[in-house]
Length: 100
Image 1 (tube, rainbow, N blue to C red):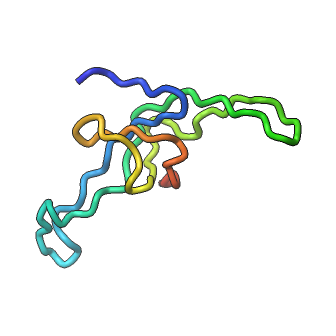
Image 2 (tube, one colour; image 1 turned 30 degrees about the horizontal axis):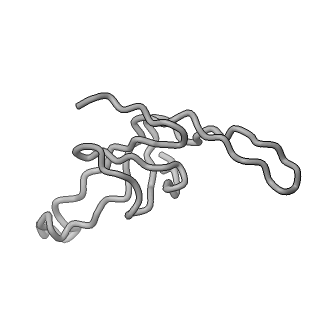
């Protein structure tokens, strides 16, 4: 696969693998597994320019707030599949960073 470099506020995430068994030990078939909403950031774009506001604030640059290696939670319907277990998201689709 080619190397991907996100642009703007894009974030490349490796989707976490779904559990194959339930807590009670029941094997879950692929069709019944929920789509994962957690993954590891592999790369992030530099950020984006934000237009000025009506209160006179000038246009400014907003850097992306996540770093490669961080684990994030994101909206289940967000992003574009770009490879096996790879998802390209906008920063605004990320709901939280998982602290260890």
